[in-house]
Length: 143
Image 1: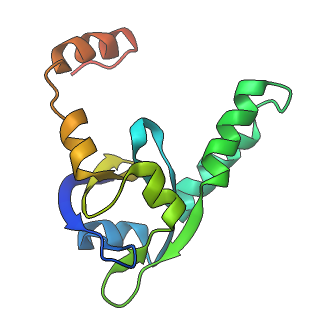
Image 2 (image 1 turned 90 degrees about the vertical axis):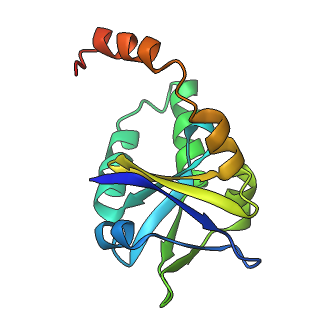
C-alpha cells in the first residue's frame, strides 16, 4: 500500500527521483499514465494489469467508455528506474500534468500520484474534508 507525501524536482531532461519507499513496492519497472484531476497515476505492473482488465470489460459501443479507455491507455508508458532511483517522464505526460520543476509524489493506496507542486497545493487544502466525509459515508465508507 502506498502512502505519504514526498517533494522532489524534475531535472532538465525530465527525470524525477521516485522515493525509496515507493520504489520498493513499485519495483524496477512500472506504468505511468495520465490521471484524473490533472496529475499522473503510477501503477506497479500487477495493479496495472488488473486496471487494464477492468478497462477491457467496458463496452466498445459506449462513447464515454471508449473515451475513458483512450485517455488512460494512450497516455500510458512503462518506465524503468535508473541507478540513481529516477524515472524519465515523457514530455507529453509532463505537459499534461504541468510538471516543470517542483513536484509532489503522494501514495494513494494502490497507486502513486505525481503532481506539480502548484497544483497539489491548490488541490490539497482539504478545507471541505468534512463535507467530503459525509459523501463518503453515503458510499458506504465510515471511519
